[in-house]
Amino acid sequence: MSYDNIHRFLLRSVASLGVLSFHDTEEILSKSFPETEFAINDLVQNINEKLKPLKQQIKIVNEETTMQKNLVFISLGCDITTKTQNMFSSEQLDYFRILLEQIMTTESRQITAIQAINLAGKGSVAITDAEALLLIWCRMHYLEKIGSNYAIGLRAIHEFERYFQENMPDRVPNCCLCNQSVFRGYNCPGCDEAIHTNCLKNYSDKHHKWPCCKADFYESHLERLDCQGMSQTLHSKRQTQGEPSNVSNRTVEIEDSDQETEETTVEISQSKKRKRKTK
Image 1: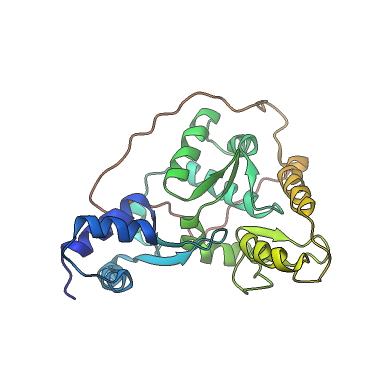
Image 2 (image 1 turned 135 degrees about the vertical axis):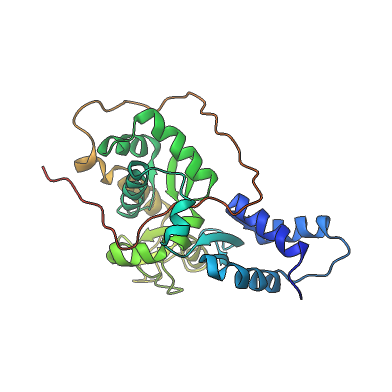
């Protein structure tokens, strides 16, 4: 199949949204090109050939929690071309790195909204700016809002996989059931083995056991792990001065972008490691 308007349309759609479900992709393509027969896998393969020189890619992945198939637009390189697309300052990127690291050091792979806001104080990002940045990164699927908590978004999981492996290898274990990296999941309270949320649900529904050590499974285990995970970073990570007691309810307006060019990407250098302050 030659590269034509349906390829361009799909590329613009996925790049502008960051993440598009397989179901929604089929729906919008069917409505926009009703007379055209297509196979999404083939379209993506053709698009990726065009994107290869730009070190960008559309990746078809399963979301860890729901196992829903999605198309994710990611940047693969750290070259000048990628950096020129970056709409964030070095201070903002440093804040983003801190967020990712803090999320990955909790048992539940989530942090509260208050924790996320407070982490801005570790760098040069103002608290009010942090609220807007969190909203932008959620819209770009680099973060995901789950209730009042933040988790790593589907796009960040696949775009920064190498960064996580190189900088936090002990925090990205493989699932004891499917042997894939765990970004959304739990550690067994009995043996500390990691497991995806969806893998655990499917297994425990049938066996009522933890799959790793066969200990009895109860829903209260997950509730306790969630509580431990949310409070884990508060012991040593909170600021000693100027810590807000709650998050502002102020509405932050972010201008939507409908540009037809590829979506702006967050750049995290895979070779640069953040300097940590010592007390």
